[in-house]
Length: 190
Image (cartoon, rainbow, N blue to C red):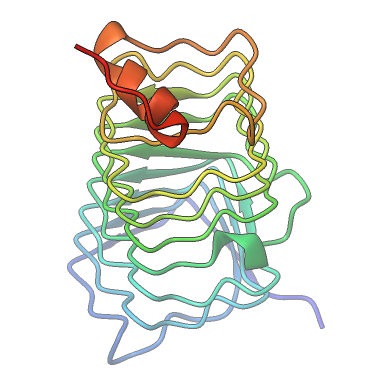
């Protein structure tokens, strides 16, 4: 069953946690100061949409299409991005809280993450090659068999990435971040 297409619409200050958003395909829409917490976005489609200052914590994304979607200053806590439709998946995050989110096995090459919090976020087996992590906090984030070749972590912090368990060829790190790369070797750095 085809969904209705909603284009170029702006939604502001709406609490969708009480009145669920209409199941549709959203193109070039913006959602500002909205609350979607615990919403079910299963089988929705968002193309070239922007979410600003919104709460999307613990939303369900089963088979959700997210094509060129930008999140600015949003709460995205506990979201399983791995459930999304993988076809044409392109995202951008600025100033977001992505704590406890899961990017397991996702391909998000050349993705931009700026000023984000990734507390206990799971990047296991994801392909993040060529991505930019600008001023991001990776407190207790998990990298396990993650591809971060050519990614830039120079301004980020609190990461622990084992070079023997992840692909990090030509990735960029700052000198301050070196302990996070050597943590599993049980050596002391002064």
